[in-house]
Length: 100
Image (tube, rainbow, N blue to C red; front, side):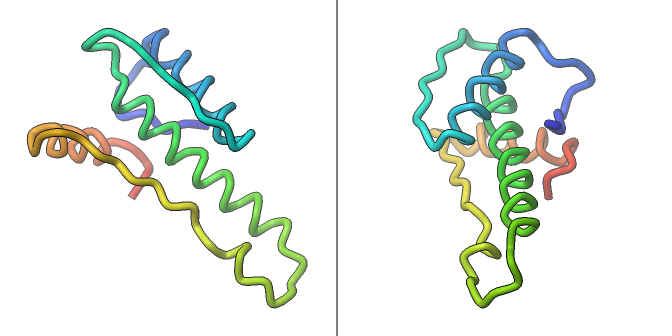
C-alpha cells in the first residue's frame, strides 16, 4: 500500500508506481517518462518509500534470530533534484504522507 500526498491518484501515477515497485522487487532498473504535471516526483518517491517499508518488514520477519545484522539494515533512498524550490515542493508533499 502506497501513502499518497493527494486525495486521488492519477492514472500516470498509478502506472509509474506499478512499474517502479515491480523493478524494486526484482532488483532491476526502470526508466519512466511522463509529461509535466503528471505527478512524477510524488509517485516515484512515495512508491520507493512504500517499497522501503515493505522490504524492511519482510526482511525483519524473515530474520531467524541469528547475529546477521544485514536483516536490520534499511535500504537508503536518495532523492536528487535541480533546484531548491523542487526540494521545498517535495518536502511539503511528503508532510502529507505517512513517510517520516
